[in-house]
Length: 256
Image (tube, rainbow, N blue to C red; front, side, top):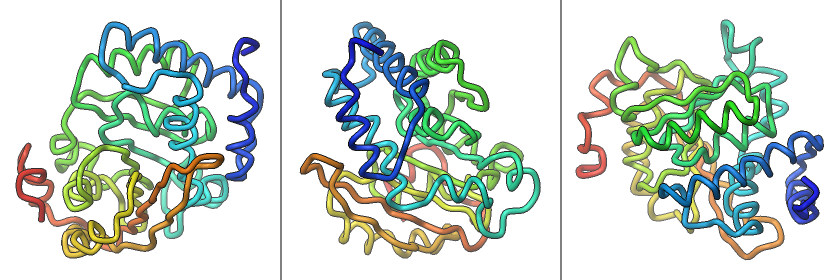
């Protein structure tokens, strides 16, 4: 870790109420090195400069604490949580994880989370598995496939306490990909990089149709920057109708 200045990283996390052990920072630096090394041979991220990766990927991923108290939720179990997930750690799925954001930073910072990373590009899964192995992370897996497929009955449907996504899609489309994975009483949190009031209004019917309710929108800037962010927190209040998600490509071409 010695060759990296982590003071800004520590300060940004402190602003968000997050304290990490030194080992966690070592893992973040190792992750950074793997990301930039693999990025030379495959397209993982356009952001490679150290300070920018820390802010726009690591801090951004952990900014979920602005919309949900992860530590408290882990210790208490989500409201209405039943069965093993209440005791064994929050079950989280990251849809369209790409290079592992926000799922891997969440796992490093909150190791008690049980995390599934889902991405449709197999080359990225190879990278994610390398990160998981090199960082010695436990209770995390990377799956190759489309969100529409794993959400089918008998797969991973309605089996997670929390679904997160930084994927670039409008909220109606993203909700159709993500809400089917969330159990009733769980939450879906969408990371957005811009003001989203119109997008949220447009998505209300879709969210309701999919069994969700928009609980709140947290708007803020990332610590020490003028980078604007919104977290859209959606509560799952009833089961998603079996016809959703529709077949591959439809949710993006014809949003609900």
